[in-house]
Amino acid sequence: MRKRCPSARIVGVARLADHRLAFTRRSTRRRCGVADVSPQSGSEVWGVVYRITKSKDLRALDSAEGFRTDRKRSNSYARRLRQVTFDTPSAKPRRVSIYLANPHRYPPRPSIDYIGHLCRGAEYWGLPIDYQKMLTHVSTLT
Image (tube, rainbow, N blue to C red):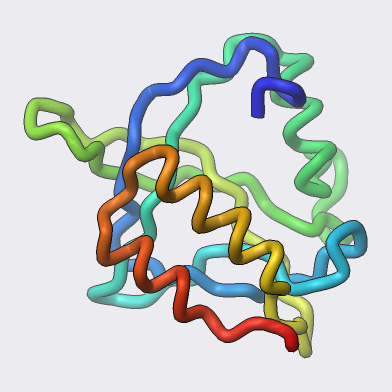
């Protein structure tokens, strides 16, 4: 994140309620399914929230995610507001921008390497242990 967006600063670890981790798009760069979230009552997704203060950094992130504000149909992802809850007891819920995939019809599973990348990030940021365990059980390409 720091490479793409030098102004990015960590806000904290957060939970997105009523969504599940999904792999609904194929990355042309990674050649496998890549992470997304889909609405699902009772489920939750954990991640890290950043504050980005420079518009050029936001444009760089949008570009990396295949999103442009001047087009509607050909975007890979849409930037949307969702409410998250931070993992600290005193923190209030906050609306943040997230990227939601424009799903492919038949996306492939993620690769073992990609899931390893997600697992290392989850461990590094101290995401809940149950969430980390769930990541290790995601079905991957063989």
